[in-house]
Picture (cartoon, rainbow, N blue to C red):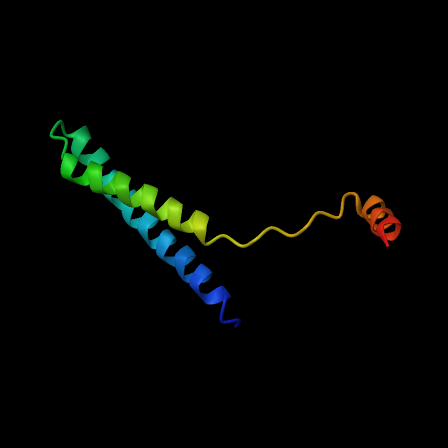
Length: 82
């Protein structure tokens, strides 16, 4: 495993954990709301964990690969510059 890839992978895994935790808290809030006694103590942290997890997963995403769509044109441009 590359040393540089590890922090990005760690952010992704922590983000997944926070999303999972946030979803559990939001489900608990939904259940409490169905019995007509909403517990906002589940809603607020659940929403914050969900947003934090999404942000961490967005930071830890893998870089996109370059597109091969116009590779012939790019080769010609590189040849003309030299």
